[in-house]
Amino acid sequence: MTQKKTYNSINQTWFKILFLFHFSFFYSVYYSKCVFSQTYSDHEIDTLDQNGKSVPYDSDGELFFHKLNEKLDPHGVQFALSWTGETAGIVRGGRRKGVDYAHQIAFSVDMDWEKIAGFKGFSTHAMILNLAGRNASSDYVGDSQIQAQEIYGGGYDRLFHMNYIYIEQQLWKDQVNIRAGRLSVGNEFASSPFACQFMLIATCGQPRSIQSQQGFTPWPGTVWGIRFLFHLTRQSYFQLGAYESSPWGTGKGGVAGFDWSTNAATGVFIPIEYSYNSEFGKDNLTGYYHIGAGLDTSRFQTWSAQAVKGNKRDNRSQFWVMMDQMIFRNDPKKDHGLYLILNYGHDSTTTSTFKDLYNVGFINKGFWKKRPYDQIGFMFTYYTVPKSLKYAQKYQMTQLSSPFNAKVLSLLNGAPAAQTNSALFELNYGISAYRGVMVMPVVEYFHHVAATKAYKDAFVIGLKTNINF
Image (cartoon, rainbow, N blue to C red; front, side, top):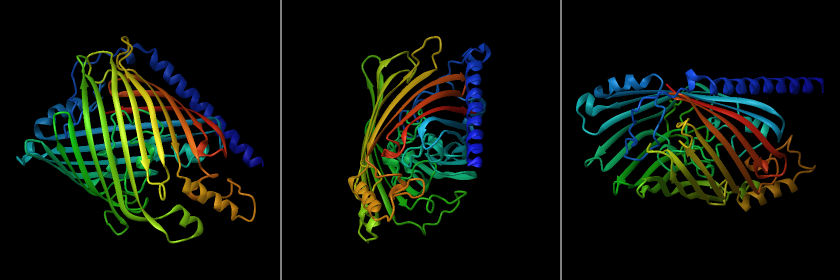
């Protein structure tokens, strides 16, 4: 008992220290004229990626690599380095109070071989990561479904992890784009430019239900794959791909990301998607629309079969509809306006951890003239789990000789009780502290933690910081 009290006392002390540190940092940065002068150059970063897709205007650019990359661009080489840190403190509800920190350091190299050696339309891309920290959702919130810190979503804790490495080829006057190599499905499909401007993994990098399945490999996992993209018009495109489907922890490159064998593969994941980038009205109200679906040819043991130790198996399929639409423009900058965000994802019910998931929210960029690069965001998420999973969990509970104790045992899906539905809220304010530096205080709320009533609703205060070097 004394040891437990000592642990809790130490844990609460650290929470107070971190909270006061973050508050003082936020306060000093906000009122420092040298940091918040925002005397940025008027240089506009290209708003189209290598596929011709629209991406958000990066108002702050980079700290160091911007000028270097300008000099290297004629030679076909580009570097990028970023750090994202996320601290989440559970102040009420959940399993217990506490604070966790997680971060990601990413370094990438992009090489345009048309400029280097004259190979028309050919390029290569590679990224390495450093991933560290702990998961506040599993440690303190008690949620097996939604991470309070999206940066921990991959479940890695590695000094060095090889992320993606692939070749890219543009054909027929850039109307067709092909990527092949070690790829992440989430880098290509169901991708929103605003998804990771929230700290909950409910939206980053895709709506959670989409990326929760084995075949749809999200960041930072990569598998062998190939993707074809066809530009239909200047504003629309269609893409499809084929990717290795392997169980978590076995087919995503291993500890360091260099295990590229396919020994663990159980099938192929086949996604398709149609996307449209809007520019409505005289104010060019930009928007990003995606309609897609995916099928995993692997055969998975159904929830009911897992509960009774049977052999029944089924495929997994899913579809999604996503919209990020500017409804009011604040200034002429590419993505400075009020965006309405609507997402819906549905998964097959016999083998998936989610049934339906909805995201409804907004991001407002450039709304304050005195601070044109700040932003504010709000996101509401509601999801349900399949009834077959709930019934399988209830069956497990009836088979126990003693009452179920969530502190000792767990059910299918790592749940603390039979699962039904959950609602989550996030409110954040992104402070553009300097070129390439974004500091974002965050408030999160978990209603029905882990889609159960096993714990009290959790209230989380966090800080997300992103630096593009």
